[in-house]
Image (cartoon, helix red, strand yellow):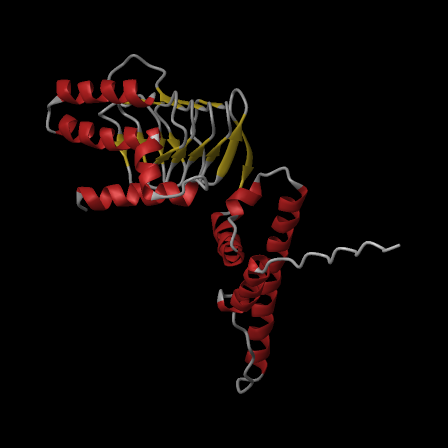
Length: 272
């Protein structure tokens, strides 16, 4: 992948995860997390070329300009996003997979002065909340979520949510079922990840509806298979939920929002 293609991908990841982003120019000029990532990619390339002093110099300049400290030896995957950025520290032997997100104040640090692997490995899709501290040479599994201000010092399984000091697992999801719920949620125009942990009654109600729809869809599929096994000639509409099923509804809702509301007619004043 070329440098321009990588920069384009990094900018697009900002739009996917920050609703405040409005246009490319704004993102390129005003997102310190993006600036720190681009400078790190340059510093890491120099580090791999054994130009370590120059790489550390670029890293120091990046920290001064953005408030984000990323050691040039750290390995970072694609579509990595640092939101707000101030106070983020990523150590030398840290490894970050694709589609990971860090918020301000996150530390990926070590607990030993010995050389070698000292910092954590984040697998694909990990989210670390503001102020989270992930300390030590262990792995945080794919899709795991680290709560704000949590202190994590041991391995986290895939799909788990960790909160508190010290960090403890409060929820671990089945990735297969969770992916199915996310797929249904995207068809309605919102993200199941955002619904999952929000203490909002409306969000919890939507989450319950999604789970009910997913369970109903599975039961209908089993019913269709059972009927077809009894009579091979019968044809039943056993298709799963798809985007086309809701396109007309979404078009109607968007058109209603765009239409201006009729203002009530003002009452005429009574003449004497």
